[in-house]
Length: 172
Image 1 (cartoon, rainbow, N blue to C red):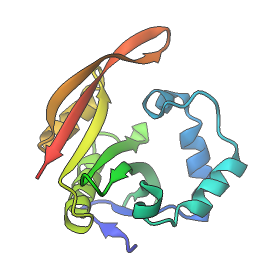
Image 2: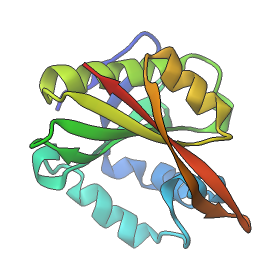
Image 3: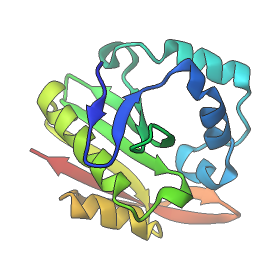
């Protein structure tokens, strides 16, 4: 797959040289809540993941894009997951390193992947799961016309408390 080019970012496939970025990101406890991670990943396991990242979305049912800034530095990731071609839907999640937030990068990346999913995967809907206190993500997805369709009560258990998870959909 060729890179997807936005206004201020590009999206590309995972590459072997992304191992350190992936290691730091996946092992950052700040992100574990949204990824349902409970233990750190080894570099060995992440290398295996990168080696299999070439799989087609129809085979793997998921695809991870690396978000790069204009100088080609990785600044985040955007994932398509639970791809279901029978029902023409796919989940979407985005993660930016905190120092790159509030610069328009997330909007640019999300717009690119929305266009990609509808144009090339011929899906009918995208969905996102967002914890109810994640105001930045809620604002981002609502800005791009995702609609709140439900609340999963006490869905996420983290830091000895339960959090609600909101379900957003974009249907075309």
